[in-house]
Image 1 (cartoon, rainbow, N blue to C red):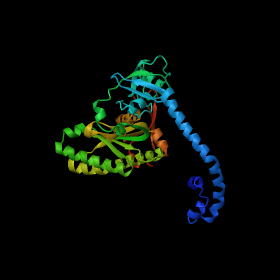
Image 2: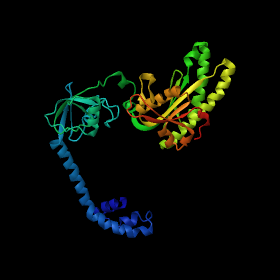
Image 3: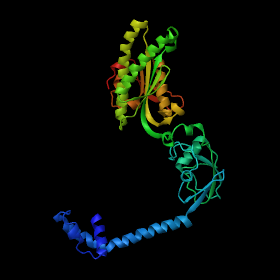
Image 4: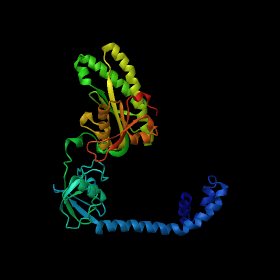
Length: 370
């Protein structure tokens, strides 16, 4: 392509020997037959192609400026004029008008929603994303998602969520925009720790907790997980380091088995030092979650939220009811390709879900074969 452009330019200067005198030392001899075929085509069609591109660009500018512009008006008197086909959220960004959009304009949240003040009765009907959001939240018919509306005529809107709240100042807009991805969640929690803490001095409790945190943390990180948060005597960990969710599922089960072995070793020390033994439970589930930066000020951290996180927490709680160390969803075990015969099987009710969930139980996770 470069050779053809150079050839065409020099042909306009009547420099017929340019290719021979300038590029001779840079072009292999076997390339000349190809150049001989390209040069006539370039000479013939390049001016036409260039003219078509120029005319197309000019036509697009004229169409956009004079025949395809819409005006988006906001309550504070500001307005933005954009090309037809742009969304209201895109218009807000073009006009530097603050507008919430936690999911980044993908129709996966409702934080960009606006109330339609005046649309001339010509607003397109809601698409599938909008319809799902409207039905789920029971929104009024005059409330729409700014990231999904592409007005064809002038329109007046009022953003529903305050863009100047404290969350907006917590971190950058890019960091606050979460992403939806499949993650594997592990919850670990000590049993009857309140009773244990009441019988020990405060600094002894700190010592015991830090030993427990160290056992779990080292095992989790060595198996590709990351510690998300410590909640009193509870731990939440996320396994999403691998592109293949099956690998993450295997990693979390290896971590659960390792935690069980580590806690057995720790308990031997605890019995000698404090005449106490720590009991614990673990819950594991996987599924789509929203992963993003959440919090305020210096407390902003990356975490995962969503229904599947709640399910993992519920499964950890069920270890008390079943008197076992581990409750894992069948989905995780099957993705990890482990033998399910080594588990006890149950169907459980999960608060907030209509259908029962198939789960696998293990009283001693240290003997689990992954």
